[in-house]
Structures are given as structure tokens and as C-alpha cells.
Amino acid sequence: MKSFYIFFTLLFSSLAFADQPVDLEINMKNTGLAYKQAVQATDLAEFNIAIDKFIKLVKVSKTAKFYKEPEQSLQGLDKVIAQAELAKNAANKQGLAEAKASLKNIDDLRKKYHKLHEPPGFFELLFGS
Image (cartoon, rainbow, N blue to C red; front, side, top):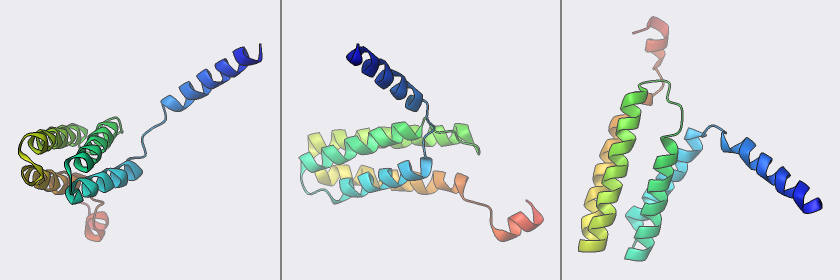
């Protein structure tokens, strides 16, 4: 009977946490760390671990709620995932040097899509725009 009670307690507690919203700021910091680890990787195994973690975190980011330009944000995340998968394929077939070129494209995409979510400047808040 105790095990039955424990089972249901764990089941319902895990279901309660399953629908928790993604803390996008924390997730993006972890994504940045995984990206940095992939860029700094010195061997293929280290790179693959980092890029797999990166892809997983970006996919988690897609579940977040975007208030400003949600379609473009999701489109950008899809492009990032595609580039990361290209980088992984390149690393496994052609070596780390080829993969790191694809990683540069990821950084360019990050810069482009982060502009969508920059907070408004002082004058924008003051005068609207």
C-alpha cells in the first residue's frame, strides 16, 4: 500500500511540474554555455556532447512563450537547430574545422534574432515609436 501511495504521489507531482513554463533567460544562458563549449571543443567527442546539449536546449526554447514576434522567433530557432545539425554532420564527416564554420552562422543568427527581443530604449519608451 505504501508503494502504491508513493507511486501516485510521484506521478502527480511530475505531472504538475511538466507544464511549467520555460524560463527563457536561464535556458538561453545554458544554451550559450553549450555553444561556447562546442566552439572551444578540441576533440570530436567533446564537440558532439556540447552540440547535442545545445540542440536540446534550443528545442526547449521553442516551447517558451514569445510575446514579441513569435513566428519570427520560432523561425529563427528552427534555423539555429538546422545550422547546429549541419555543424554536427560536418564535424563527424569532415572534422572540427568545418563544423566551426557552421557555428559562426549560428552566432550570426543569434545576433539577428536577438534584435527582435531587445528591450526598448529610453527615447522609445518616452516618445513611443
